[in-house]
Length: 503
RNA sequence: GGGCCGUUAGCUCAGUCGGUAGAGCAGCUGGCUUUUAACCAGUUUGUCGUGCGUUCGAUUCGCACACGGCCCA
Image (cartoon, rainbow, N blue to C red):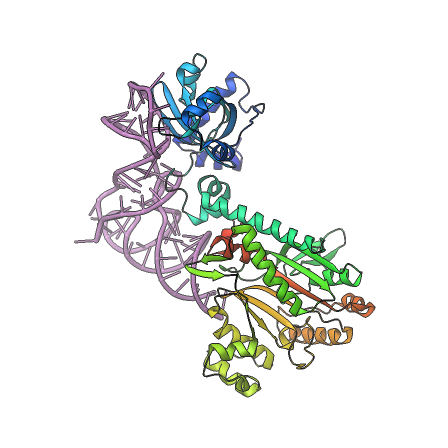
């Protein structure tokens, strides 16, 4: 009989270290339960340090506190009759002091064979060593889970980005900085949720699988829904459904969830990314800029404890009022040789676009040209948080027209360190205008723009029932976490970034 | 999709102007009852990413491919 593929792979993957550990596990199996689950702890490393680091050796000796702690062995210093183990749990590291004479007969000899990476539990007295390190002097120690594979190098850790992403668990075991990134991510999302709930927003979940992908200019992933026998899409945004909910009377809603865009991968783009999207009735884009500014400031304080932080060697200040510039004003401000007037005519804008080496597509209107020029000569250069407003109608098919200048919308995006962090606007609630904008999108799609939107008839119907005056915004959660954690790549803040399957 | 860089022991890395490889850590053996990346002595481990080519000989040179990273579109 041929061995299965899995067996083959396992065999190929084996080396001496794994074989030795597997043999140790076999010995454990022969003695009884090799993977026990009856050890209970009453202490965590981090709490022990927080509570007792200040106590002296003598004070601890008088108290003679008994604790039981558990975790993964990350360092060991074994001597003939006594040893020190550094054990890591979810809160940090605590040292175990293991003395042969305090353990039952024969246990110390077994213990000496345990490996770095094993999960152990120990019970004993809290004490301080002569060098002042808080430790648990164990009178009972058990191997709770045998680790068959050697951990990465104990000091330099795991550096190989491919392994860090593919085997994130290893990265998390070994690299404290990586653990911190993901706890910061969790705190950010928690604080965001609390911020909105405190302001009477209701959290909702809307479909990931949609028959018409809407709400964003992006190419969707496609799939087939067997039970309905229908081709479907993974959503590119929850926008249209959230606004349907506002039509339904939920005047403040938000969703923190994944969006999927079948597009390029880069340090700033992941095809599967997390977005906060929220809608507030009886508010406009100006209200949301104010809310965004306050929310970002609040999150920074709550999550990293300061509104001033360093991102890739640049100090970012969320404490000062965020700059606000119109799209055309920003282009003019960052390029002293460009005048807003030149940007306002099709011929002038084309000329400027060509100066920046932009390949002008014939189907582009003035608005698209202006957007391209902005991206070419402003976006990357914005460092401190800056709202850009008044985006052209052509590139904002769901946003409300400005009352005084109908060629632009009441829309903003906020940029930090050359990256768009959020996009919001007063919602277009005129169903007839929206229908016309959808028709323009369909024309663009037919002309070959894969990112153009579909015509969503039901959404128009919803608007015809009446969407109250509303503003909404999407916030790139991953990108915000990148800022808070000083991470250069979006993959660094996603636990399991997509990788090409290994062959 | 294009450009550049990388892939060597379980991990972190060196190296070979072409003669099949080393260090530290981890592992193993021995010693050590307050260590701190413990220490001391000894010791094991590699399809040098894959394939093809050039060559007497390729981990090293060339080409292709795979995977990853960064930049650009």
